[in-house]
Length: 411
Image 1 (cartoon, one colour):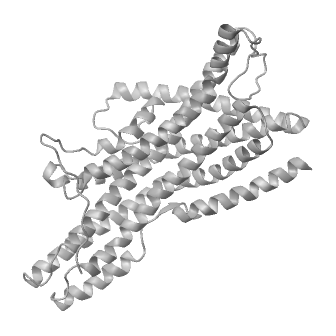
Image 2 (image 1 turned 135 degrees about the vertical axis):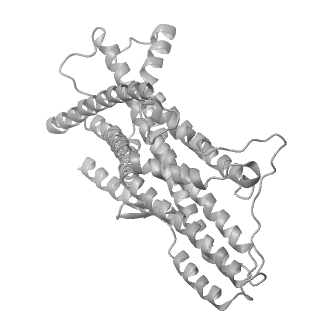
Image 3 (image 1 turned 180 degrees about the horizontal axis):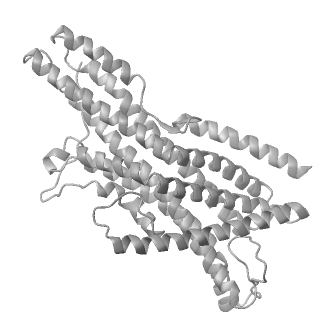
């Protein structure tokens, strides 16, 4: 059978090879914004690490202080039977913050293993431009960059729409148009044991919530983009391995040379399988948090939208819902690409010219095909295998929670 045609991009004159860091730069920028290094960097000195450490401690203390104040508000609202709509809106924010907290903490704990994964990919990464051409590095990087820019762009628009809404409202309605007197409001409902609406306390609370919102968002975005970058690199290697196998013609040279080729293929394949396993162990908890929180966020935001409200609140809720869906689809798309690329190894073994090979060589091919029939997957721990099918399951679960919440509200 004819081998597959690989997609290759034309390299312009004077083009430079693409380093591995080009895939990881977006995740690193967001991690650095909260003072965190997800893995050991070659250029990080002790002074820089100490400065980032104290920055990280301060950001996490502020984030969790805001989270506690939001939780107290929800408990008081439910206990008193008042402000039910505000409490349900706060639950969406709380879910977002809790997931961000968990993802930051879990990636911080996995730093050593994550460093090993990045180092292994560094060893596998083609260095020279002529080596990168068969891997289509530029093509994979451009695809990942498009996903990433759209993903973090939408989330930045969302968070700063929430964070700056009341500040912009004050500037336009009160100072510029003079429509109505400005009532001091914070981006997120919270409870503190003092009157925050008077004096300079309001401005401190406003800045604190803005910083907390951005820190939570940065932790979430960085974890998701780092995982998708690693998956993209592994997919790139799977596709290269498939093309390498399909291009081999067995039986032309000696059986010994064919067996050496097969041994190299098996070793390469095994390294990729181990990388997939390590990625799952690092990001399994993060993936589970993503899908559980997205289900609740879709549910609560959908509930808020169906009961009506002010047009400005509805616009922000639509943005929140859209971002939750973008997150789910981006992760599921990368997970599906990993499944497809790893399954293609078996197809490539079948497609390559093995008819005239030695009998021992042909028997060995059966083992590779059998292993490839169990594709590599992204796993949200032991509970969920992630793919595009997972999206429909998530939407069904979200609708069930939504129907339950509507029933409780109507009664």
